[in-house]
Image 1 (cartoon, rainbow, N blue to C red):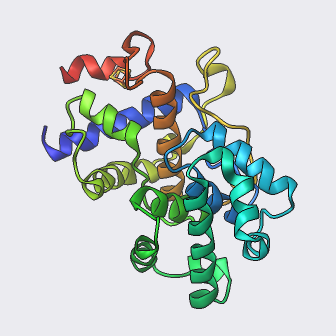
Image 2 (cartoon, helix red, strand yellow):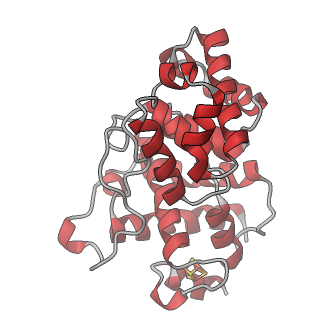
Length: 259
Ligand code: SF4
């Protein structure tokens, strides 16, 4: 498929999903730091497990920069155990804080004031941060305009014949960013659908509104934010690894054209 056709296809998916399900309210968090902790914890596990781990850290009154900074490693490991790989993840969180303290005097405001590409490279150099985690932090905590590619994105692209599942992360990211930028300039593509027009009984994978999901952000970041959440909705509810429930999926009409 040609690049311009791929981009048109992705814009059509965004429009169809956003008009069907409306805002998805990713990322569900009270603060930027909670987004960062969640981005680490969600590696290789389901979000429901992350919620349990975050609830433990919150109940221990440690869900803050200073809280994680002063928490003994063993205590942090115990609290985040429900998220799996808890030893690895606890160490990685400590490494992030050490980096923040050393390079940005412990200030998230200073960290996120850095240029996007520079900050992305720095995050990718940290132990335990791959592109999906780096981009989740940049987009959802920092309001930087980068699209987050996950396994659902790859699966949908592959099943629709747009790109093979093993395509390089950055190739997929750039495809989505170029495809969705025009949507960020279109008032119609940003306007929330009226509630009564939302599909009955389904909102994708929508969370309840939270301080982070309703935070002020640029139009581009907002569209990237929504598209990632909408893709999670498709992946979780329809485009499962073991079985695609195409008959009920809002992207079914595009599949027919792709094949
Ligand atoms: S479930 Fe079917 S229609 Fe929906 S995204 Fe997956 S392959 Fe496409």
